[in-house]
Length: 281
Image 1 (cartoon, rainbow, N blue to C red):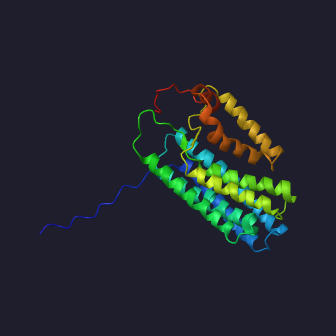
Image 2: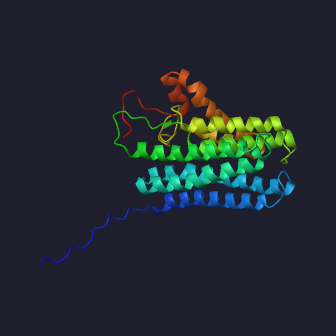
Image 3: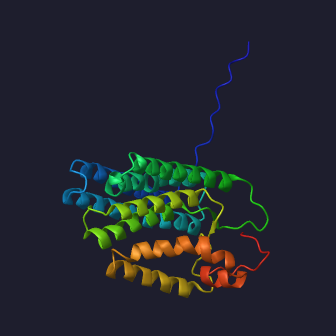
């Protein structure tokens, strides 16, 4: 009688330390953002105390955007990007750019919309679209690469969607309610529309540049670096206005501007020096 064959298990994935530490920073920022929102929910809706905590939650979401911007770039620089990092990044993104922004908008802005449960429904729509967008991205990333396959995003990236809705909320609070949560109903409805549109854009086929190909060896990177420095300065000088304008420019670029640009104009703006017909490798 032959001996039983021992079970065989899949190989453990390789886990690069540095990029996954940055992804963990993204996840922790989302977690602390949610904890801060819960602290704000202990106070009456629209109170100054609640606003203080919701404002802190926005900072955690913006910090998560920075970690998310860095982790993939570091992984590519180290030549250690792989399926583990992609899955871990998606899990972190669901928390930081799905659950946290949906909760924040529902409690900070959409809680007082005249139609019952409309604010909660739009927040749920946003969360579902974010999760579906991340799942679709992972499936497309795992599929075999086609010749001349573009590195650009199909649909609005989830971190940019979160940045757009949170920064717009930040701006609306500043210009309408003197930095508290007593927001006019018209602006609340406007924010609901913005959140619904952003949700649908995540699941759309609109092409958005990924800027994954930008590195220190590319022509045009000096202009990209200059724009990045100007963006940081704008964030510091106009913290209530600049984030919304920057995220809005990216949203409108893919939706309205990019389809009408020539290949040469897109390459100049996106710092993409690849010739038509060349591959990504």
